[in-house]
Image (tube, rainbow, N blue to C red; front, side, top):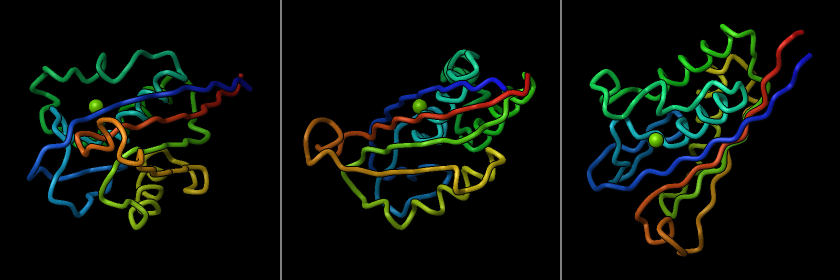
Length: 160
Ligand code: MG
């Protein structure tokens, strides 16, 4: 069996009055993320971790942010497409671990819903999907409430 690890990183700026999507879940909040797609920065980082593990490029390569095709795209759909790209090459997702840095709002109530939604798309048990959230203690652009930063790690396997 082959085992690969990949990591992904993404940032989006916060904008007032936009819907906020994180990990495939809508967050009840008066602001959201400025983006060409729905701005789900957690899913974007996860897509890059998966693509990175399979050495299949990155999210910007497959879903360019200047293409009308992906304007307002549901990031859950982008993730499903990434999973399909991997499975076309024989890769199965093994696990994922995501860290979201956001000053506000508190994400605790949304963590388990995110794990369930992501696990459903990845085709794995929610027990293999970890989502963690942290503030940055008011430091930096995250701490000033200007943006959200996400790191993701995923492992994939292939029978050989
Ligand atoms: Mg992005």
